[in-house]
Length: 282
Image 1 (cartoon, helix red, strand yellow):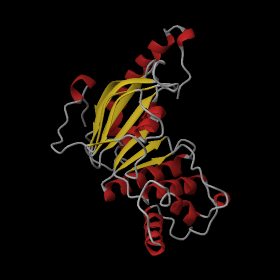
Image 2 (spheres, rainbow, N blue to C red):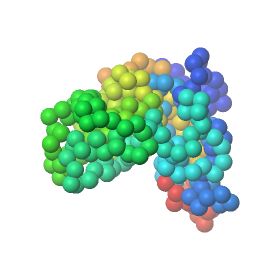
Image 3 (cartoon, rainbow, N blue to C red):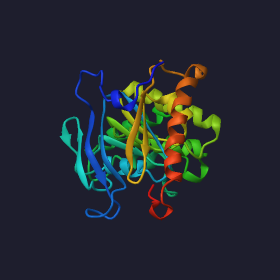
């Protein structure tokens, strides 16, 4: 296990071009001319890599994910996916939100198929649509639950459906906005293992927003820390311990303490700031 300070960790050992490249990205809730929620974000993510974003509420983590997913415009800067500039939503980018957002009148199969019938994306014949839904259900371990409706699902099952809906579109990048925050500890561990498994099997890159240091240590190849007002990346750590790490948490303790120390410095800076300037941005 090793870590690198942000000033040197940006030197990537990857030889292949990045899957996702973000260049000096800024965004504001109110649009151009208003203070940015996050500012001057630059990073690269490679195929199959799992990146976690840590930071206090209000630093712009969720806003960054929505901007990368094409759900809101950038104020300035550029986003490139496989070398092509991203200007709107793309089928290659899957999104899993904090809540599963399932329609009560749809069963699990129809909820997953819904993502394949959106206007932006390929059109499938019924037989092909069924095959993709079946594959997504198998990916998340719900092959016998396709007939169930939202009110019949536990929290963990609902998030599996949300993940399956994203996986059915065969994304190259998954954006996860704290999807496990409301789950109990055992279900959360099961979901962490599931996400790592499907990301590895399908060679999907993952950008995962979390408030949980331990979750980041368990799943990430790299961890970024964001400060706020405006949101910006202030630290980066490489986690070189081999995955899965669920049985080797003690070896991650030194890195955990380093990250906790960095978080306390960010929190100290927030306490010393003028309260009048505090933002409520997420």
